[in-house]
Length: 158
Ligand SMILES: CC(C)(COP(=O)(O)OP(=O)(O)OC[C@H]1O[C@@H](n2cnc3c(N)ncnc32)[C@H](O)[C@@H]1OP(=O)(O)O)[C@@H](O)C(=O)NCCC(=O)NCCS
Image 1 (tube, rainbow, N blue to C red):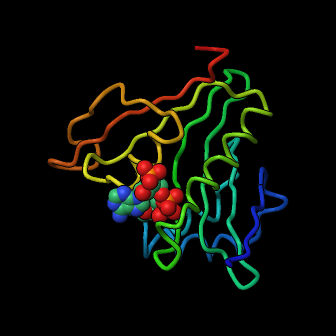
Image 2 (spheres, rainbow, N blue to C red):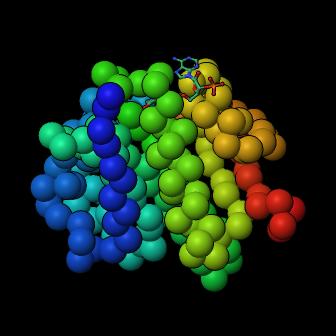
């Protein structure tokens, strides 16, 4: 059985250049809309964010990243990724669940994300985590690449 754990990182002091390099490479190779390396180096500068790493003993095999605004009880999912070798075995559900719990404990109750219209795996993941589609934004990712906007509110706040 695959052994893994989650590591939550919430500020620049615990975020190393080595992590920036590893995440930047995963993002570049496997995320549909990757960022430049500079954005990874400056991940926590001027941003209040939650990063959760999914690690085996050997390496980082996935991550998810939220922007958070605790004052507004609000969090925005920027990225979630599982390495292709480890997909379709339920890891992203566990990873997202862990991040949502962390954010709820920090006071967030409203969640928001964009997902490309043809990214069915990601949409299934978000629907299973109680996100709902509220809008379709045309050409969000470029010509003829629309985004679905999805939100999730805690039951006690909806
Ligand atoms: C989206 C992603 C994170 C899903 O990770 P995963 O660990 O493979 O997903 P899980 O195994 O936890 O499955 C989550 C749900 O998606 C479904 N799913 C997984 N892969 C799928 C696929 N290729 N096609 C359709 N559904 C799929 C699963 O069946 C499950 O739904 P269910 O509960 O109804 O059975 C992964 O495919 C990925 O890293 N994609 C590239 C990055 C990306 O697109 N991120 C999202 C950007 S918005």
